Amino acid sequence: MTCPSTRRSLWAGLIASLMLGWAPASQAAPTLIWLLRDLPPLTVFHGPQKGQGVIDKMMPDLIANMPQYQHIVMQVNRARALQMLEEQSLACDPALVWNPARALSIVYSDPVTELHSNGMAILREDRQRLQPFIHDDKVDLPGLLKAQTLKLGVIAKRSYGVWIDNQLARGPASQIVMHYGSDPLASLLQMQQAGRMPALLGYWPEIQAKASQQGLSPDALMFYPIQGAPEFQPIYVGCTDTPEGREVISHVNSILLKLGPAPPSSLDVH
Image 1 (cartoon, helix red, strand yellow):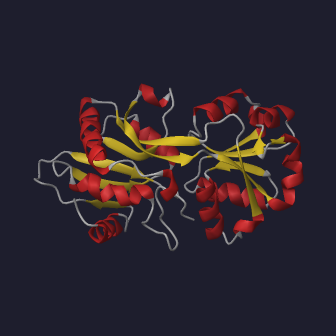
Image 2 (cartoon, one colour):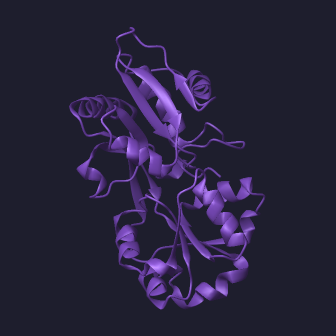
Image 3 (tube, one colour):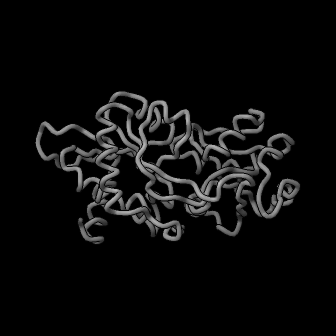
């Protein structure tokens, strides 16, 4: 196993461009595509914590322990990553949430780590608009959607966890602002600032990091967990559900068994 400083140097080289090749053990080595996006605290592409996310730190170990593959790293948004995972090329996403629809075409590893679940962020100046739906410092998401008084921003094709996904699926489509862009959370934050929708969903460290990139003070936002949702969200490696993808997952599980899961307390990066 490589030392931490070596892993950091290795990973810094891997994410230096949109697509990077890893030296294969032989020219005939199969290609394994890793699909990543900027998702603090799992992967951090910008700011002082760049390269220090939980998955950032894990990737060099995964790659170093699978020399039988030619590893390629691609930065893609959530919608494109899911599209690639449904194709026949050998691709894996190391920061994936499980849900039943995805499990039809994606094979999952053992849990890599877990995060505090997604919640709702609102501008502090708009907090009174959310107050009717706050109970014990948590948001009544079904009640908010049913009332149809506040629009809610979400990222297209993203899973916010099975419980939250189910509530969104049952809610009025007119209340949900869905964004497909290359940097969808940044776009949603800009829309929030412009008054086009007051609330959005995400992980709190992710929202804080993206808000900081937008020049928005973290104090300008308030965050609430979702009432009824699990406190923690497991994160997995997911690969194309093919014989080759299942073989990769078998290797990943063996490596994870040696590494052990990252504890939730280590995930507070901003």
